[in-house]
Amino acid sequence: MIVLAGLGNPGEKYARHRHNVGFMAVDAIADAHGFSASREKFHGVFREGFLDAPSGRAKAIVLKPLTHMNDSGRSLRAAADFYKLDANDFVVFYDELDLAPGKLRIKTGGGAAGHNGVRSIDSHLGNDFRRVRIGIGHPGDKSKVTGHVLGNFSKADRDWLDPMLDAIARAAPFLADDEDQRFVSDVAQRLAPARNEAKAKPKTKAAETPTSKPSEETNGNPFTDAFRKLLGR
Image (cartoon, rainbow, N blue to C red; front, top):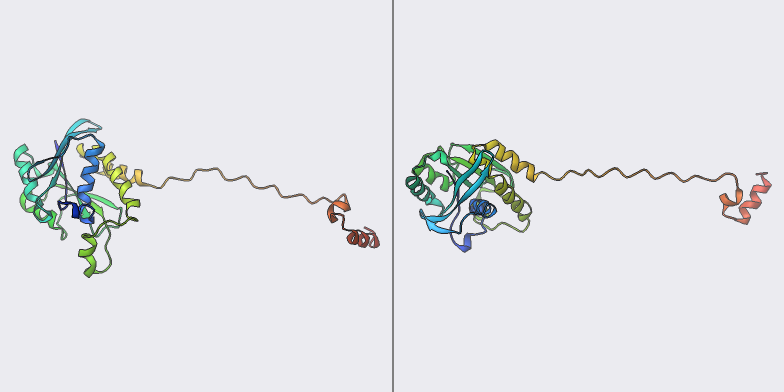
């Protein structure tokens, strides 16, 4: 069994924040694969279902902690204790300031890099869990970081965000097989711009200048015709 945990803050006022992209990602997975309706369990919002992984159908759980970001680990610990799971049975989705918008990376272990939700999970579960980092970009000024992270995605962001969430949802079955690089590759392929394969337009045939009939060359201009006669043409 695999637990797909998304990080974010509960409540409607936070729902569209960049900091909540982890919630958005696991919701997209659960919706795409027909998981059960949401219910509260393990101090979070819980959904269960199956992923049709290459190796076969795999049991999966989606979990969104309701403990607020800074205490996310308590929710994951409760799920781990109930199902007798290890840290490596968890895949955690969250926002990453140091990745450009729309970029995605996955790794196992590592530091929290200043992310309080990840730091909380480290303290409750250990750090041997898989991390799917979704880039939200850096505002370029340290003083603007809080407003950026806790601000809503803009309308322009939806141009990359919606396709990315869809790609993550479709590629998720690879995670059930521990095929992390195939997951990343599949997401990248789905997001790659469509290639223009239209055939080159045929070259326009150059217009031929008639030479046999002076009247065609001159469009019947009487002054030009008279001048040609004087020159013997």
